[in-house]
Amino acid sequence: MGKIIAFSNQKGGVGKTTTCVNVSAYLAKKGYKCLLVDLDPQGNATSGLGFAKSEVKNSVYNVMIDEMPIEDAVVKTCVDGFDILPSSIDLAGAEVELVYVKDREHVLKRVLEKARPSYDFIAIDCPPSLGLLTINALAAADTVIIPIQSEYYALEGLSQLMNTIKLVVKHLNEKLKIEGVVLTMNDNRAIISRQISAEIKKFFGKRVFETAIPRNIRLAEAPSHGVPIMLHDTRCSGAKAYLALTEEFLSRQPSKRN
Image (cartoon, rainbow, N blue to C red; front, side, top):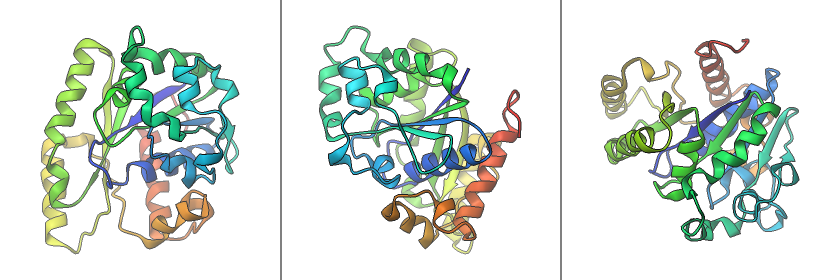
């Protein structure tokens, strides 16, 4: 049965989608069957893997709102063993439509439970908000990975995210755990970056991954080419960091081979 991981942070621009896409790609390269669910109406994971949002015929919207079978919407990416349930422009209105759906917080969970047997890992790229779509992701997930930018404003809103996770555990998904925290856009040369990193490690302790993701222009370029970093520049610092992060993630999995 596949493990479901939500990549979540309500603050935008923290490397959430980049982390979700590249960890998933490296997991697939290591032989795991992976599905990425693009739950963000902006659809950056979808376009970053080479799919034009305007040309997506079937998406996570159709699966959640129209009750389309998930296998009819899932498409293969450029990496063997790595599939995506794409986003589309229709997803922007999904939160309003979900309000009228029975047991609306568990719509995604019902969908993904059917897909679990087909995958080793299912990664959910959450929207940069704490609305109903993110609640659906947290209610469906086994664990959550929190990418945090190593900059001053990164700590703002963190307590709100943690409170949301606590409420989800209490009312919707008592098994949800924090998988870990990833420091992104890291620059150890900057004093403020080191200070923020120290504060985050003080707050989260051992749940912070040892591997930090550096600022790297090649990482920023890869989505424009529609590929994960390992197919854009496997030798750059960003690629090496995401490979190391994936290996560290796997080392934390009790029942997965590394």
